[in-house]
Length: 89
Picture 1: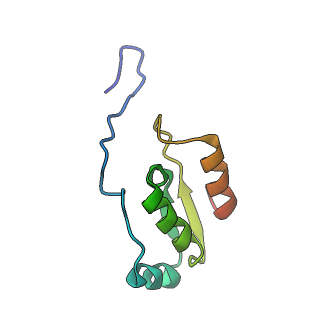
Picture 2: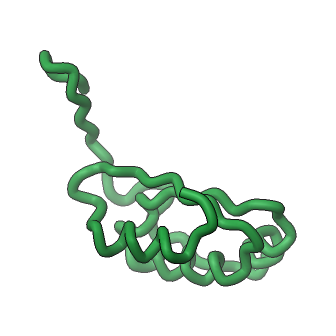
Picture 3: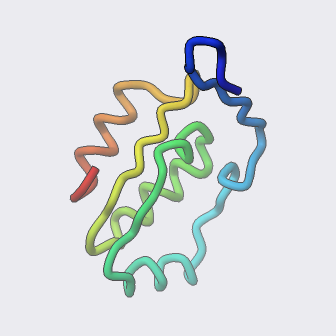
């Protein structure tokens, strides 16, 4: 939704497709083989998915962060941690 000042707001329902993602062997293989692993920071709102992301980041050759700044689903602490683990943001 966009208000009269042109500011957008979002309703992001929980759970969504990026919540409760469990790491699998197939994911490990695909990420290890990929030239780049592109991911969004919104995955970190869920502890299960965050753990999976961190596990996949360890396997990725080149990591690209798409920072999804959607209140209240991000913190400076999490964004800084993700930035320290990525090659491009």
